[in-house]
View 1: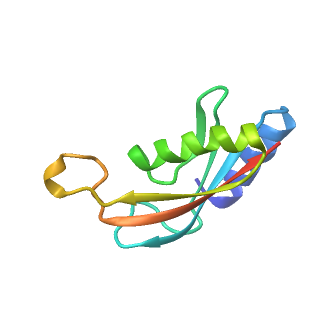
View 2: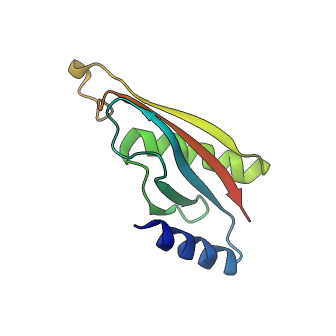
Length: 106
């Protein structure tokens, strides 16, 4: 989803009085599924997401942080480490790290 579409979707969420979080990849190192600037809207109340920051384990950590961010009203930085050993059979073996800024939008 393009950045313009993400912001249009964000405006729609706000227009419907939904409390959501906006997650933005702010930096990356190594091999990662998405790069700086990638965005995702998270609505923990409905479980819906718009956009992506990469999927799998990384998104799960960011979604958990989004719940806290919405509850407290305070933004958070989440480090997503995709560094599991190749023999772990984990889906989180890209080999990189992403820093994701999660902010409440009310």
